[in-house]
Image 1: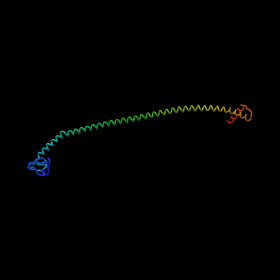
Image 2 (image 1 turned 135 degrees about the horizontal axis):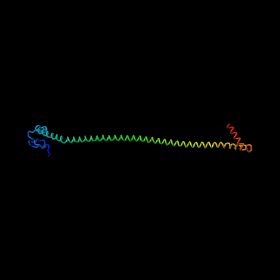
Image 3 (image 1 turned 180 degrees about the vertical axis):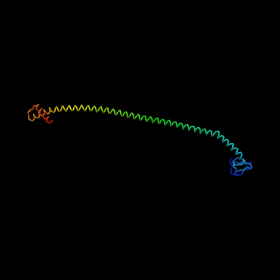
Image 4 (image 1 turned 45 degrees about the vertical axis):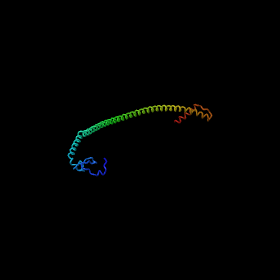
Length: 197
């Protein structure tokens, strides 16, 4: 309902309904007192306070606190399970790392042994090939030295004949007399012996 300012300023008569609150004014009732502080309603207010507090206490004790306790217990159990699982997984990871490191060390030692064996085999093969090559070269060198000695001996044998023929040709050219081959050979042999002595 709409209230005009002039109507609102007039005080209502006793038993008349106040237009703003809709509450009838009682005779002898103090106006302007806040209802919770009204001393006439204290006993009923205390009774309702006790009843409300009791109901709220029972609700807390029977419903809310057990639910919160159950939630906290579930969380505690879940956290404990998660910690146990984490500890188990950490143990598994540590065991896997130890196994990996052991296998890695074994693989390194095997690789070292294989490399050492391969190096020794390669060294032995190289030594055998070098020995065979040196033996082959020694044989070829001996054959070459024998061939050189044979050619040298043959050349020395032919030197005397060549010198006798050359001496005979020189004598023939110089003096114009054809010399005896036997005399030229004897003269060359005498010179060779004179130089050797």
